[in-house]
Image (cartoon, rainbow, N blue to C red):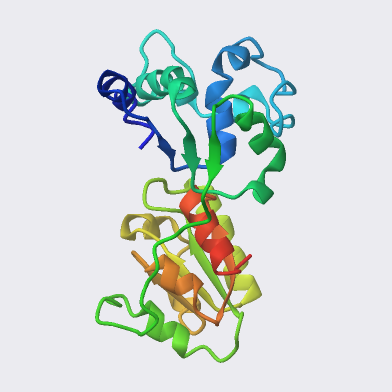
Length: 240
């Protein structure tokens, strides 16, 4: 794991290769490598970073920068960025075609830059007892292929209430079948009566076996926070 940056020093001491594995997208790695240049571009677009020219300074997450009181994550990323150029190779769970401009730029920064993806954990195709929320059996009961909207924003962040309300209202209006993986706490932000009014065509669960859901024939659309694992799983399942 590239975040274990101190492995570089151990490998150097033992005289063995260090091959860190970056588990996120190539665009995020690129942004971290250009931190010094980005700091000077506050308030401007990132026109100097190949593939990220249309992003603005304000679009970036705070952990990219080291301020007067940096978070542990920011310190870890900074240490990692300093060590990565010493690696024998940098490995990515991605593929060149998704970001060719960024990939070519990253190849110029390391001895070897290797895309080995997309790679995701496989899962059984048979409905098994781990379908505790009943979402897989619910999908089986939908009548048409590619008819269900699957919604998940990951396990870490919950969208603000106004965004949840807007999405809920859109789902209720369009009346397409939907499966929504949403934390129980976040349900309090949904419009009053939403669960009852959509119960005939929608299902909300606190967690869903995402790979298996995306692999189901009846799922035709994925609304996501665009975390890298979710993007790869969507691509591998051919679900837009």
